[in-house]
Amino acid sequence: MTESDCKGKIAIVGSGLIGQSWATIFAGSGYSVTIYDIDSEQVTRALANTKLTLERYEQDGCLRGKLSAHQQSNLICGSNNLKSCLQNALYVQECVPESIEMKKEVFTQLDEYCEEKTIMASSSSCINSSQFTEDLKHRSNMLIAHPVNPPYFLPLVEIIPAPWTDPEITAQTRSLLEEVGQSPITLNKEVPGFALNRIQYAVINECWSLLQSGVLSAADIDKVMYEGLGRRYAFIGPLETMHLNADGIVDYCKRYAEGAYNVSATFTPPPIKYDIPTAELVEKELRQITPTDKANERKQWRDSQFAALDKLKRGSN
Ligand SMILES: NC(=O)C1=CN([C@@H]2O[C@H](COP(=O)(O)OP(=O)(O)OC[C@H]3O[C@@H](n4cnc5c(N)ncnc54)[C@H](O)[C@@H]3O)[C@@H](O)[C@H]2O)C=CC1
Ligand SMILES: O=C(O)[C@@H](O)C(=O)[C@H](O)[C@@H](O)CO
Image (cartoon, rainbow, N blue to C red; front, side, top):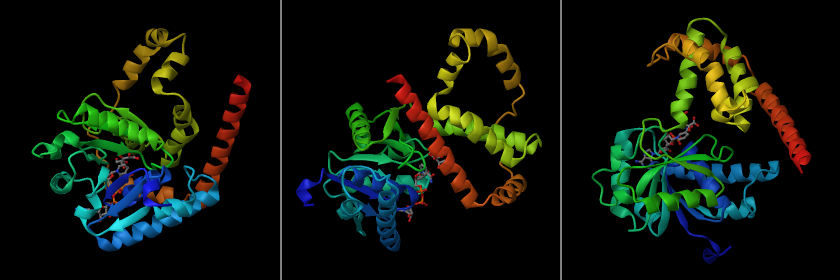
């Protein structure tokens, strides 16, 4: 593949777990990807990891896109120089650790080296970009694009513009992410934790409270999700569930709102403390489940879900 066959250049800043995932996603769609990390040895590790990962996906039949794993790996290169990593990049995905100070430092550098039209997105899980871009010259090109782990298999990306992000930049980010196979949503305004982690923390808070009060074991709490709510929510959302659990959502509210208020009134008010003694007990229990057991269970589950889905699709044709 020659350089002119590539769609354009993507820069990844920070090459840990999430930086590597983004690299495989963009390469899968034919973009040329340059990875930068403050730790030059990490860049070498990241290149080796992404190559191995793409080869494994190819063997397992889940490689994205039309290019082979070999062609995709050849689209990913490393750089130990931030300025050259950013040169001619149409889009930068920042993936440094979750700290306002670090994000501020990196975005100040991006602001200095970027091209006028470069879009600069942060992978931040909870920190809004207005907390680290306010004083920057190119702040209208900066926003959040928060992925879900593992991004290669969970397509949701939350796009959160700062009040000063140019709406055209938000729209371009959304269409780029759609083009590479992700499934973006756009928040209309900034809120701590965005949508996914607000919902995730509400779930974790209640799980922790059930653990601390001794209502359920750790294993049974997880089961509530993977045998119940999780499976449901893989196919339909909470609002659609309300709608389908009664004669429509209006009827659901009439029938179940009082019960829901009564239960909700018993919730432990936040912030819930994720205390270490409870965490140590949970860790002991989780360690008894061997990774192989889990992997087999998950594979069986995935296969059965796909078979059910296929059946449904055939039935509706
Ligand atoms: N781990 C997860 O499940 C998810 C994480 N995120 C977010 O993605 C971001 C990255 O997270 P991870 O990849 O898990 O972290 P990580 O710790 O695996 O990787 C961070 C990388 O950034 C590098 N780094 C540190 N300072 C740097 C700098 N000044 N310039 C360039 N590189 C620098 C580190 O050397 C390291 O390789 C965080 O904001 C995190 O909240 C988002 C979704 C999921
Ligand atoms: O996949 C996730 O859970 C994430 O998208 C995150 O934002 C973080 O890693 C999250 O777990 C932090 O609480």
